[in-house]
Length: 164
Image (cartoon, rainbow, N blue to C red):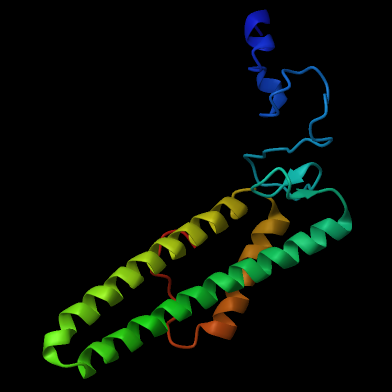
């Protein structure tokens, strides 16, 4: 590595800590491994954020449980959006014709915001899955199944989105 780049904090062995390979210097005491291949290893596992670091069996179990809950929450959000769409369509049918355009436009704006939130949530789940850690991947799948079991009563089991 070029000596100049090393002192500018561009040491690629640093994993983004910005210390340029000069030791801890007050930063995080742990490193996050970034696997690009499937693994069951949890050593130096960080999930999406540096602060979500798995450093013990207990933190692994709590993290996996949190992932199941987060993904089940995504299914709850999807079901809530579906119910909102049905309710807003019914509401638009019951208002006088002159108010229908305003009610429909307002519902469309709300649905657009909810759609953005749903997509952000889905991409965050995708990033969690992309730790390539088998334990995390299984937890995402269990959360999806649990969420569908609890919240997915008004839809088929086939997916209509590309990411989660």
